[in-house]
Image (cartoon, rainbow, N blue to C red; front, side, top):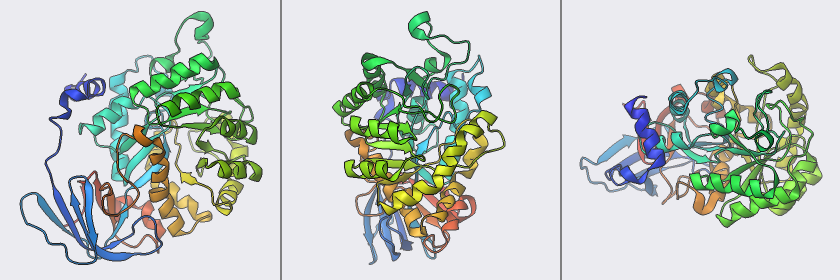
Length: 445
C-alpha cells in the first residue's frame, strides 16, 4: 500500500489527527470585469467578484479596492462568463469507476478501490463538477481523502451503503452467496460497504444508524425494482410501510432525510406516505403520483438515460426498455407541474461513461431551455443538497454566485445562456474552475 493511500484511509478513520494542520492560509482572489450568471436568474450581469478564503466576499458592479499582497491573486475575467460549479445529484463514485468484473474480483481491497476511484474523482472535478451527491457505495474513504487535500475531487454528499431488502435492488449477492440470516455469512458486497441487506424494522434501523455513524448526509433506500440488479423486476415494490417508516424516523432523528430508488406509482406512493423526501428515477410515474409528490414537497431526482451502451448486459437492456419509454413523459409532466426537480447521471459499472457526464446535461435540451438547464444543474441541485440540513458535510450556500456563498465557480469561454452546448466542452471552454476558493484548473494567461 502506498504511503499516500494509507494516509488517506487513516484520515477517514481519524480525521481530527490532522484537521488543525490542514487548514489553508487565508487567500484573496479578485475576478474583475466578468459576466456573471448567479444561478437563479435568467440574466447576465457584469461586475467583479472578490473571494476571501472559501467564500464569495463581495460581488459588485463597481471596482473593488484590493491590496496587492502576496495572498491576493487578480484574474481578468474579460469576455468570460462566471457560473456556479456544476452539481450532479445522482452519482456512484465507486460503482461508476469500476466494471462489474472488477467489483467481483476476489483480490479487491480498499487500496485498489481508492486508487481506481481517485482518478475518476479528479477527472470529474476537472469537468466542472464541484459537488456531487453519492447515492450508494463505499465512498467514505475517498471523501476523507478529498476533504483533506490528498486526492482531488468534488465535494461529496455521501449516502454510504445502500439499504435493501433481501431480493431487493441492493441485494448484490452472487448466485452462490446464501442469506446471512440463515447461513451466517456476510455477503461480498456488504463486506466492502456497498450495501446493507436489511429485513424488518430492527435491521433497517441498524443499517440507517450505521451509515449515519460513518457520516452519511442522507440515506438511500431501495423501494422498488431496478434495471441493474439480477433478482428484482422493475415493477416490484420493496420494503413494507413500517420498514420504510423506520428508516425515515431514524434519519429524521439525525436531522436528515431518506431518498428512495423507485420507478412505479405503487412504490413511490408508499414511500411518500412513509415520509421520504426524495425519489430517485420515477420514469414510470403517472400524473396523480407526481401531484402527490408535489403536494408533499417531495423532490424528483431524475436522469436522462439511454436505452443501451456498448458494454451493457442484455438483461439490463431489456429491463431498461419501459424506463426509457417512460422517460419521454416524466420530464414533461414534472415541468408542467412545477415540481421540485433535480438532475443526475447514475452511471454504473461502465467507467468510460464518466467522460460523457457533461454531454448528458445537454440531453435535457429536449425538454428545457438553456436557462432552465443551467439553473437545474447549479441552483436547483444545490437546494436538494441542502436538504441534509445539519448533516451536510459542507455548511454554506452552493449553486449561487452571491455574497457569502461558497466559492465554487467556473469561468466559461462564452455565454451558456445563449450556447448551452458550452457545458459539454469542459476541456476547451472551462478556462477556470474554483472549488472552495481554490483554483483547481486554469487556462488563463
